[in-house]
Length: 447
Image 1 (cartoon, rainbow, N blue to C red):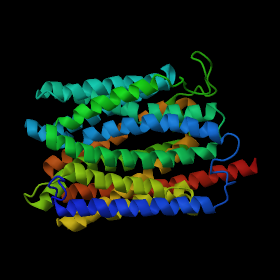
Image 2: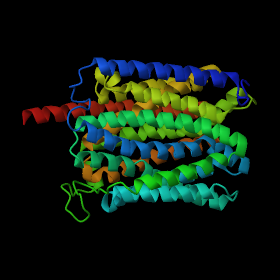
Image 3: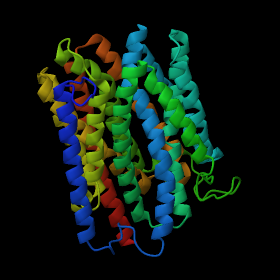
Image 4: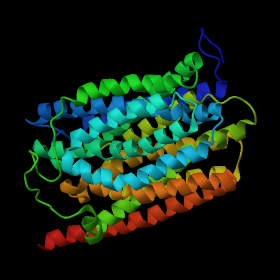
């Protein structure tokens, strides 16, 4: 479809992207109208004398978060096709990255809490620059080294930044209820960043080849490093300076073993993200199979999926889903809808139904991130945020390795069936978490 000098992208991909952007925009406007109509005094909605300071802090975090996630998404859009152009073993490289994250994740989390969350963010950004430089070389051992380092950086990405934000939020005395606003906004911005990244990746790849998006990621990572340098440091517990005693000196493993809610939250997180990352590896070859030889504009389709992620983040807002049910119950619904969506490619190989199922699944992903982020902030002690989160990246990455290797042996419809089982198991564990949360609330009332 070539109009007004635009790239020659398939009509179905352009129309899909346009429709999804329209729907997301409409939901965003509806959410804004509802926010204005609701009582501004609601505890979950930021207001009052601390609002200006909170918004300033929120912007400080979300600016870096958006840049970092855009850089990460830029790599994800073309990684499969880059390795395909190199003629290397793609699944081995993917498995290496997730195995590395599983092996080093626990240690990384412990030292993030001990040495500082800001330092963890800085180290992540430095590693990412090196990893993206290595992607330029068509040399399998160097690419493997990049995937090993990428596994370490992934552990930092999904622990250091969130841990820094939650700890800093509490250190500055902002109400706990306001964390939902930051998590929801972050999910929406993450989707927007990914949408932009997908379009940019497609345009850059059209001009510079498959390596182009990785070059753009290097520039964005360096930019994020400039902003992170000015962040204040924080550590595990209520420490404000390194060396002070934390209020909670238990090990991360001890916290998991002694608190049922923490264990369930981590297991639920691992099952959903394990399913999600397996999907990330599978969506490109699945859609290529549906197209039967026709070209797939991976960047544009990726942007469509990320529009769905933004939609999911919007739906989680206090004026929509969160206003109707608690995060615990929303998570149950997310698991069930996601499982139903991925049942489509089990029985169909036609483009339209498969595309629709992927759209629904990505919307669930957008709702899942702020939902589970809020649940983690409720149950994981501040002193052990990084350690606990990274311990559960071990089963998460094991699931992804299993899902990825299964694609080498079994057809995609069978692997999707396995992922559905993981999602249904996650729904069951989430129901146990709902019960545990209710018991904890009853215990507090009795006291």
